[in-house]
Image (cartoon, rainbow, N blue to C red):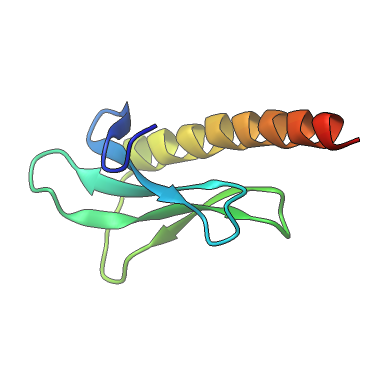
Length: 93
């Protein structure tokens, strides 16, 4: 996936691939509003919870449909990340 490419387009928000995480093991996404281009926050892997979590920018506001879209994207990417991690683990073993 190329940097800056829309990874997923939701009802009001685009998830833009920002590149690999600092560790290089997962991806980082920036969530942007369609209409204004304003950045809502970032989606990053949270090792302690073993899933992607949304890190919202200060002073951002969300309604239920937007939150559902973000939560669904978190779940999709979390499943994909766990599959990738298992595949790497099998190859390393």
